[in-house]
Image 1 (cartoon, one colour):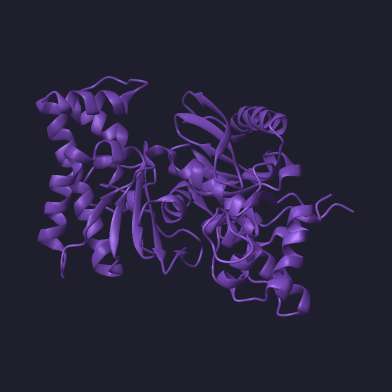
Image 2: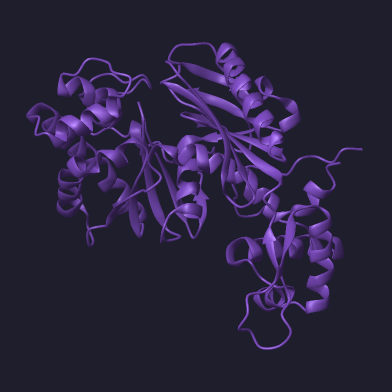
Length: 402
């Protein structure tokens, strides 16, 4: 009987293995995998020291993980250590891979990430998905997924699961897109339209972007507010290293916070939403630029060359973003705000007005704003790494798959 693939939903508190002997061993297997992933290469003795178990207990688990092709031995440790050198262990570069996918308003993307965190295969399709029915979009996405899985398999990998990032409201602990205004989707069980053998999970793109920042960002604290943007603007709140989801899973809809209540109508049904002033399309219109496939690059190029209309549009977008963020910062008191997605590439012209609003409106000391190094890749990488981390958390599930 084939075991289920690991639960690839982004983590939240309360999901844990039982405190039985079997459950404790499974948790310890995950601790071994995380120790080697984070600190390796390590010897068995070093792993035992890191996680506080006996060398004999760790050695038995390591033997299992090697047999399951999740760890591999690299040979004797580097010289210079006291005593007999042990065999250095590393996470395997073959075996399970996380498949991440992203449904964007103007693109589809898929990638495969191995247990070492390396992107091993990738496929992208550019083109508008606005107003298209979910079925043809997911058919094209499935073609990209199968292409990436095939390429990964040629490289000695197999798909351990699929996680999909979508710019919309996703019902908590489900695969249903309740509403994606910029796509025009409502109440769509997206998981049912994707390859069942990959046990697809679905989450908001801003959530995956925040998790990518938490896991891959340099020096990102465990408490932050992550803002990302494409056509729309999303946000995710990370508290003590865990996503703040809200009762229904809809927390973080910063793009639909009204900054001018009497402003223009928004696809969400409201008026004067942040997206109408700081979203990609809003900036394009304000700058007087025609639709362009490489809009972000064009905006950055023109702003850098001193184009007054573009700089004004970006400054105004920063002001609107600062107004919306002030409410979130005053309410949540995050350690920092991380600017990601498309906004990251435009930060030199957004930040001055954004930070001025935060300084002038925040009740306490101004919250620092940092710029993500992941940029638009964040949601896709976060989705793939969610699968990878599920494998590291509970490697026994993967071992039972065959």
